[in-house]
Image 1 (tube, rainbow, N blue to C red):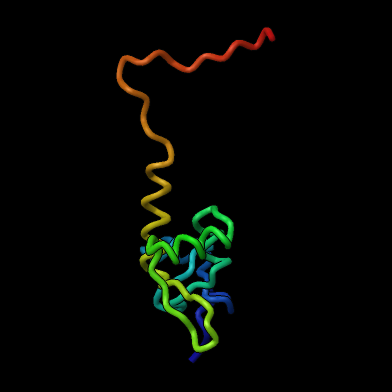
Image 2 (cartoon, rainbow, N blue to C red):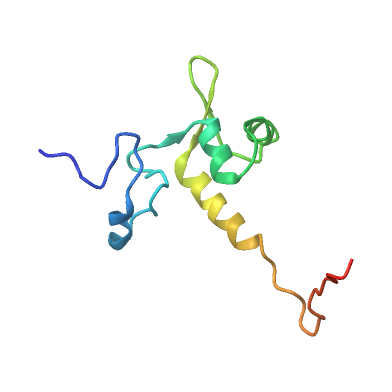
Length: 106
């Protein structure tokens, strides 16, 4: 059996997988990489690794502990959370609100 050419050795899919309804390029595939490292979650959520650990302690992120005591985060729920956050980052301006105009003569 030949390896999938669209798959890299780190469990990330390349751009060719987009056409098949699979995760976007650069995102981990939950079927191949079921758990993420703290640093990977931090990158996906645009947060510091320390913040990711704090969120896990506060119960805001699901995680498991390895035998060595390190946290591992389930890929699927983290990707869904990142997608939900990215859609709420730019709220629409209230209807009838004046546009934000900045003066450039200062």
